Length: 584
Ligand code: AMP
Image 1 (cartoon, protein in one colour):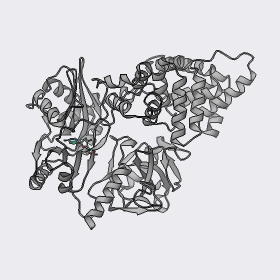
Image 2: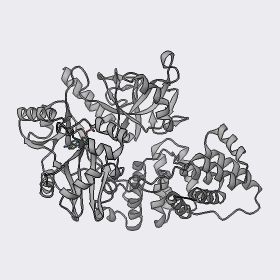
Image 3: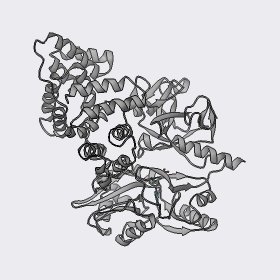
Image 4: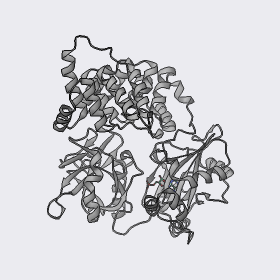
């Protein structure tokens, strides 16, 4: 496929906001692609070259890209800068100046294919050291001069890390399911959840069909998308949901971490599947020393320990000190423990389909608890008194609450899914929502009076998994310190967009729109029905969505969560319903 053809699909995708239409354009695009192109096309369509966990990003700077455009089109830099100032998007600038150029050309240059473009982008992203800038400039201007104006527009946005087609990984999975599985996403989604590598999944499908999905196993080195917990508001509800007997584990307030033991050592991934290996050399050493396995994927929570008292520390404090002192000093000041709670792969065996109790047993067999690797404190419980006692112990040991886990034979590791096999239960706050919510920032309102020059409030949204949209739930204006308030415009600037992003569903029009990127923790008084917010719209009552009343910022930015990890509209519905139960 020529890159310019791919760009034409992108134009069509961009011109619609309807997910079904987007999916059918993607289906057409994948049908048209060769087997050896589908991996590259999958990554490129998400604006990337590789899966996120590799940590390799393009993000070329404006100056270099502007220079490349000026070279490719034979136009003075000043003209490029002026145009950029006017339209605010170097992609549009490239399109405009190349249009003029191609009108003057007698012979059009040979157009590059997707794979030719991909392989040069690959070189660009890997080039570093002295002379790298000149090299990148030469490669990029070479690429641009061979492209159609429309192709150049999308390539420029891609290399700047600003291709925002409104296509999420789940939309691509839908398209692949339409193409290879009669619209049934189950097997394909599972393969993706186990490997987090959409290109690999797409290519395996193109080469071997659906059968390939059945054989895909977790691979040490590729993060598994984490299993997520539902929440309930009382021990009775939790016990009823899990059939009376269940496992209770401490819910540690730390950083979730997947540790992969591979041949060359240990690799750590965060909840968002970022490679966090360099941040925790202490955890690497501990896992290598105290987990007995040749190849394994285990999961746990990294928690800071106060060296003076031996008590667990709140996570914020650990992160704060790490930022202040850097890794080395923080290591000395705050040792960490990792509390393991699961094992998903062990020496060649996929354990994700093995029930929880067996997984826990396998975990106990391989962990030596004499150092800083521990097992999550756990107890099997069948009555409310024991539940409450365990919960109190968890709180007094410095935990946030408890995690209840299903112990039936159905209790597999549900990668990438939020389900009722795990239920979190946190400390109850009087006359407030029992739990905080984590919401994506999608807009802002300009401040007045004392808040002139910054934002008066932020527009926040929950994630609707079914429609893959961010639906508004509240305007947030309180809970910020002055300092934090005035730092907001700068902090959020890289998510700023001119128009409402395709995946945001809002009846309110803020002064400023943001691409969902930042997630903030919010405490609210209760959940109410609202005609102006779109979360779970029509789910409880026609013409009304759910809103959070009296929201205030807790001061915690959930940098460990991607926008799709925000509290979901489904969770809000459940919180609303359990709130009703409490009142009646
Ligand atoms: P939340 O971040 O409030 O949605 O709660 C879910 C998080 O609790 C998980 O992502 C883990 O990081 C954390 N967690 C702490 N202890 C456990 C445990 N024993 N089992 C599972 N998750 C745990």
